[in-house]
Every structure is written in C-alpha cells, then in structure tokens.
Image 1 (cartoon, rainbow, N blue to C red):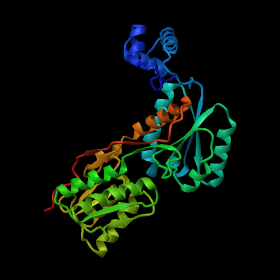
Image 2: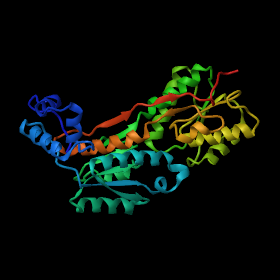
Image 3: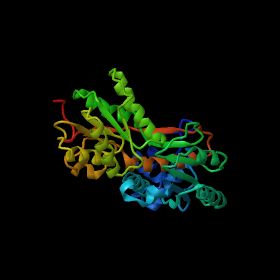
Image 4: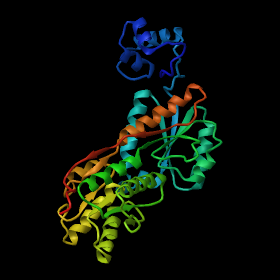
Amino acid sequence: MKHGRKARGVRLDQVAERCGVSISTVSRALSNSPGVRDDLRNHIIDTARAMNYPLLPSVVGRKVMLAASSVAMLDHARSQFTMYVLDGLAERARALGVELLTRPVACDADEVALLEEAAADEAITGCLFLTLDADEMLTRASGFAKPIVLVNGDDPAMRHSSVTPCNRSAAYLATSHLLSLGHRRILFLQRPGRRTIRRRLEGWQDAMRGADIDVDDLTVDVDDWLPELGEAAILSRIAAKADFTAVLAAGDSLAYGAMRALQQSGIDVPGQVSVMGIDDLPVSAFSSPPLTTIHVPMQEIGAAALGLLLDELDGADKPPRRIELACRLVLRESTGPVV
C-alpha cells in the first residue's frame, strides 16, 4: 500500500505520533517498502485507515506491463540509456512487490497485441511505455481504460502522464557552458525524430540565439545513435568545412564518435575543438579524453515512472501530469576555452 493525498487534515506525522514511530517508518509501511516488521506494518495500516488517512489498494502481487522499443531493448550500443532506466524501474518494482511484464514493440501489431493483453488481464494495473511516443501509438491507446505512463517520452496532447529528464534545460545548460568558454561555432550532433531529442535541439537553439548566434548551418544529423555514425558525420563536416570550435552531441554515444573523428583528423580535443555529450553514461568517465557531459538521472526516471503509475490507481480524478527531472553539468576533460 502507498499513502495518497491527505484528507480531512490528517497528516503523515499524525499517524506516526498515534503509532509511536517515526514518519519514515510510517512512509515505508504504507508504501510496502522493506525494513518494517509485518506486525508493525499491519498496525500502522490499521491506524491510518481508522484515522481516515487515504490508502491505495494493495499493489503487492499486481502486474504492470512494460512496453519498450525492441531496438532499445536488444542493441547494447544504443540501449545503455534504456538499461539504466530499466534498472531503476526494476529496483522500485521489487521494493513494492510489483511484477513487471516486459513486452518488446517492433511494429503496429505488437502495439495492438500488448494493449489487448493488458485490457484482458485483470491483474495488470496499468502500462509503462518506455521510449515509445509515436503519435499513432498514443492515439491507439487514447481510449485504454487503465492508466498509462510514458517513460522517457511525452504526449503533446497530454492524454497520458509522463516522466522525462528536462531535456530542453539539459541542452541549454550544456550550450551555456560552451559559450562561457568562448565558443560560438558550436555544432549540434543529433539523431532527429523523437520529441525528447527535439527538446534537446530546442535547448541548444535557446542558448545560441540568446547569444545572438545564427544556428542555421550548425546542425549535423545522423541516422542512429551508433558512435561510428557520429564519427562519419564529423569527418564529413571537417572535409567540407572545419568551421567549428565545439561539438555538442545529443547523446554521449555520438560524442564518442565525434572525438574519434577529430583525433583522426589531427585535431586536438579539447585544445582545438571541445566536445560535450548529454546523458553521462558510466563509460563517459573513461573515454579519451574523459567526456564533459550533462548527467541525466536515468535510474530515477524509471523509479519515478512506476511511482507515478501507482499514484494514479487511488481512484481520484487527477489530470495527466508531466514530470521532468533536473539534470546537472559534469565537468571532465573534453572541453576547454577557445584558443
């Protein structure tokens, strides 16, 4: 069980005082978190119920369907971000006693099948869509009776709740760092398509235009998140015109490729060109040079998404919500001042 919103002025600290325990103990008991004896948990739950503190129906033993892009699930070169989001989600599910049913999605038929399965199984409380925000999918799910939360995605029509990093501010923060070092010709290296990446593009544009810099010829697109594609794109740009002093990649994996391309071309990183990423994958601390990047709270995204889904099961008429988690700058050795 998980505590919901306060009713009739009853607060969590009042339940704790009545039971003679700490507020944290009450919170763990009501959320089915570990570390509370069964007899004490039952006493706290009974006391909270008697005081009219609203409680969610038990989620222990219930199921949540997790639908995820099959490409992101299977290909490690592209899926490190997904892997860490899944870690946070799975850890939270274990703590709450929730069973995750993972379903890969590769085509429209997969989307239809998983929605039908979720609708037919009464034990499934709702669905999490991981890295799935295609308009067709969202339209198909618009009449679904159970709650749906988008993980690392968003619904522009706000039909479903979602949890993402604050992508726009992440890219703005990265670009602002490069601008503070004197850079003006800052390439934005991206795989376009998903709305989450468009938010990163918009953050880069915000910072560049705020510094009165024309961005029309500074985007470089690739077809996938593979480092070798980032490498090829930057090599091509260097061959055409080496007119930049920094590269901001929309993901760390592309930044690795950008650094390789520069080094192959005899261009020092960061002595001549600075490179930044966004994500802060663990391997970024060990790249050559170690990558300056924006830390995205990947595990926290997964945990928050499950919490948001379960929070929608209390029966209250809540509008869909969009939660964005803050990101932070991680300074390493791949960026430096313009010489």
